[in-house]
Image 1 (cartoon, rainbow, N blue to C red):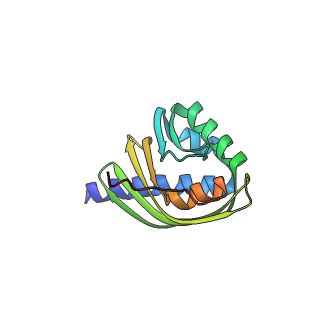
Image 2: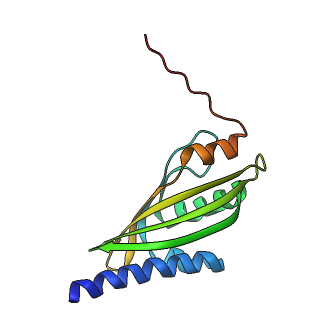
Length: 147
Protein backbone atom coordinates (compact mmCIF):
# COMPACT_ATOMS: atom_id res chain seq x y z
CA UNK A 1 0.00 0.00 0.00
CA UNK A 2 2.84 2.42 0.81
CA UNK A 3 4.38 1.89 -2.65
CA UNK A 4 1.01 2.54 -4.31
CA UNK A 5 0.66 5.83 -2.42
CA UNK A 6 4.19 6.77 -3.51
CA UNK A 7 3.21 6.20 -7.15
CA UNK A 8 0.10 8.33 -6.65
CA UNK A 9 2.29 11.16 -5.29
CA UNK A 10 4.40 11.01 -8.45
CA UNK A 11 1.29 11.12 -10.65
CA UNK A 12 0.03 14.08 -8.61
CA UNK A 13 3.39 15.86 -9.09
CA UNK A 14 3.23 15.37 -12.87
CA UNK A 15 -0.43 16.47 -13.02
CA UNK A 16 0.56 19.64 -11.11
CA UNK A 17 3.24 20.36 -13.72
CA UNK A 18 0.65 20.18 -16.50
CA UNK A 19 -1.70 22.44 -14.50
CA UNK A 20 1.12 24.96 -13.97
CA UNK A 21 1.89 24.90 -17.70
CA UNK A 22 -1.79 25.43 -18.52
CA UNK A 23 -1.86 28.49 -16.24
CA UNK A 24 1.44 29.84 -17.55
CA UNK A 25 3.18 29.41 -14.18
CA UNK A 26 6.58 28.40 -15.55
CA UNK A 27 8.41 29.19 -12.30
CA UNK A 28 6.32 26.47 -10.60
CA UNK A 29 7.29 24.06 -13.36
CA UNK A 30 10.98 24.89 -13.00
CA UNK A 31 10.81 24.40 -9.20
CA UNK A 32 9.49 20.86 -9.78
CA UNK A 33 12.59 19.98 -11.80
CA UNK A 34 15.92 18.70 -10.53
CA UNK A 35 18.60 21.39 -11.09
CA UNK A 36 20.32 19.08 -13.62
CA UNK A 37 17.14 17.79 -15.37
CA UNK A 38 17.45 16.09 -18.78
CA UNK A 39 14.59 17.35 -21.01
CA UNK A 40 14.41 15.46 -24.30
CA UNK A 41 12.19 16.02 -27.33
CA UNK A 42 12.82 14.23 -30.63
CA UNK A 43 15.08 16.07 -33.04
CA UNK A 44 13.26 17.20 -36.19
CA UNK A 45 14.57 19.07 -39.23
CA UNK A 46 13.31 22.66 -39.17
CA UNK A 47 11.80 22.37 -35.68
CA UNK A 48 13.74 24.54 -33.23
CA UNK A 49 12.50 22.98 -29.98
CA UNK A 50 13.60 19.42 -30.73
CA UNK A 51 16.62 17.91 -29.02
CA UNK A 52 18.06 17.77 -25.51
CA UNK A 53 17.76 20.61 -23.04
CA UNK A 54 19.74 20.33 -19.83
CA UNK A 55 19.14 21.86 -16.44
CA UNK A 56 16.49 24.34 -15.38
CA UNK A 57 18.04 27.04 -17.58
CA UNK A 58 17.86 24.70 -20.55
CA UNK A 59 14.20 23.96 -19.89
CA UNK A 60 13.48 27.68 -19.55
CA UNK A 61 15.14 28.18 -22.95
CA UNK A 62 13.13 25.24 -24.36
CA UNK A 63 9.86 26.95 -23.40
CA UNK A 64 11.03 30.30 -24.83
CA UNK A 65 11.93 28.61 -28.15
CA UNK A 66 8.69 26.61 -28.09
CA UNK A 67 6.60 29.74 -27.54
CA UNK A 68 8.31 31.55 -30.43
CA UNK A 69 7.93 28.55 -32.76
CA UNK A 70 4.28 27.69 -32.37
CA UNK A 71 0.84 28.62 -31.13
CA UNK A 72 -0.72 25.94 -28.98
CA UNK A 73 -4.31 25.34 -30.03
CA UNK A 74 -5.01 22.32 -27.85
CA UNK A 75 -2.99 20.35 -25.30
CA UNK A 76 -4.79 17.68 -23.32
CA UNK A 77 -3.17 15.21 -20.92
CA UNK A 78 -5.60 12.29 -20.85
CA UNK A 79 -4.18 9.29 -18.98
CA UNK A 80 -1.46 8.68 -16.40
CA UNK A 81 0.36 5.50 -15.45
CA UNK A 82 2.97 5.08 -12.72
CA UNK A 83 5.47 2.48 -11.69
CA UNK A 84 7.90 3.46 -8.99
CA UNK A 85 9.67 6.69 -9.93
CA UNK A 86 8.37 6.71 -13.53
CA UNK A 87 5.12 8.31 -14.68
CA UNK A 88 3.85 7.98 -18.23
CA UNK A 89 1.34 10.59 -19.39
CA UNK A 90 -0.60 10.13 -22.62
CA UNK A 91 -2.45 12.89 -24.40
CA UNK A 92 -2.94 14.86 -27.59
CA UNK A 93 -2.16 18.28 -28.97
CA UNK A 94 -2.82 20.58 -31.89
CA UNK A 95 -0.32 23.31 -32.69
CA UNK A 96 0.08 25.95 -35.38
CA UNK A 97 3.63 26.54 -36.57
CA UNK A 98 4.44 30.26 -36.63
CA UNK A 99 6.85 29.78 -39.53
CA UNK A 100 4.15 28.51 -41.91
CA UNK A 101 0.73 28.87 -40.30
CA UNK A 102 0.26 25.12 -40.80
CA UNK A 103 -1.33 22.98 -38.10
CA UNK A 104 -0.07 19.70 -36.69
CA UNK A 105 -2.05 17.29 -34.53
CA UNK A 106 -0.52 14.43 -32.63
CA UNK A 107 -1.03 12.01 -29.83
CA UNK A 108 1.88 12.16 -27.41
CA UNK A 109 3.53 10.22 -24.63
CA UNK A 110 5.68 11.82 -21.97
CA UNK A 111 7.87 9.65 -19.79
CA UNK A 112 8.68 11.43 -16.53
CA UNK A 113 11.43 10.08 -14.27
CA UNK A 114 11.38 11.47 -10.74
CA UNK A 115 13.71 11.27 -7.79
CA UNK A 116 12.58 12.45 -4.36
CA UNK A 117 9.59 14.17 -5.97
CA UNK A 118 11.66 16.17 -8.51
CA UNK A 119 11.75 15.51 -12.24
CA UNK A 120 15.19 14.28 -13.31
CA UNK A 121 14.24 13.39 -16.90
CA UNK A 122 11.45 13.98 -19.39
CA UNK A 123 11.39 12.06 -22.65
CA UNK A 124 8.69 13.09 -25.12
CA UNK A 125 7.30 11.02 -27.99
CA UNK A 126 5.25 12.79 -30.68
CA UNK A 127 4.34 12.44 -34.35
CA UNK A 128 7.58 13.93 -35.67
CA UNK A 129 6.44 13.78 -39.31
CA UNK A 130 3.34 15.90 -38.60
CA UNK A 131 5.26 18.45 -36.52
CA UNK A 132 8.09 18.69 -39.07
CA UNK A 133 5.62 19.10 -41.94
CA UNK A 134 3.86 21.95 -40.12
CA UNK A 135 7.11 23.80 -39.38
CA UNK A 136 8.77 23.26 -42.76
CA UNK A 137 5.62 23.84 -44.82
CA UNK A 138 6.04 20.94 -47.18
CA UNK A 139 6.09 17.21 -47.15
CA UNK A 140 9.52 15.81 -46.48
CA UNK A 141 10.79 13.89 -49.45
CA UNK A 142 12.04 10.45 -48.64
CA UNK A 143 13.86 8.26 -51.12
CA UNK A 144 14.52 4.61 -50.88
CA UNK A 145 17.66 3.29 -52.47
CA UNK A 146 17.58 -0.33 -53.46
CA UNK A 147 21.18 -0.39 -54.64
